[in-house]
Length: 249
Image: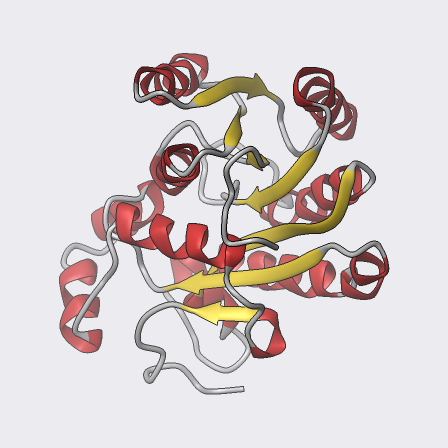
């Protein structure tokens, strides 16, 4: 893919706040047209779209629960109706620590929905397009390095999602679509990091002391945006920050 994303069409899932919102704003600042996916927080998504428009960019909020396949299909159709094509898909939506959700929700969202969105999108993506899957070191290395018990189901389901997406690589490659994983440590300012720190007071400070630096939402979003255009790294993964505390594969 060209280093210039001007005129490209990007869909970022889970983009009404946090890493997704920051990624949308950075891509729009570079000239991409951005679809801001959200599940239920319409006001937040509309605010991000308005901020992008005020800065001279082009974006629109688009509601879809990514665990709902028909809703995902409608979302893709809306993007095509509006802009005619899709060049960049950032699979950012994730979860699994929410209250009052089914026991298998983490796997449904972090594995099944990721594959569903990728497969729906690949049908309208052209040669040179790219899919980016956002994950964490705690998930990527979960088979070798334990994580916090509260995050364990999320980590395991996100690793399952990464593995399932990797199985799509041959088919994506046959279509000329590139795939890359972007993995980071705890990201300061995300809902997940704040929740883990609330459950385990001081865990963020302890982790930062251990690795020397934890990325902010904006810093990690910049890494994702760079991964949209940078050469595909070995094994299709961009490891952001220090991974020395994790067992290397």
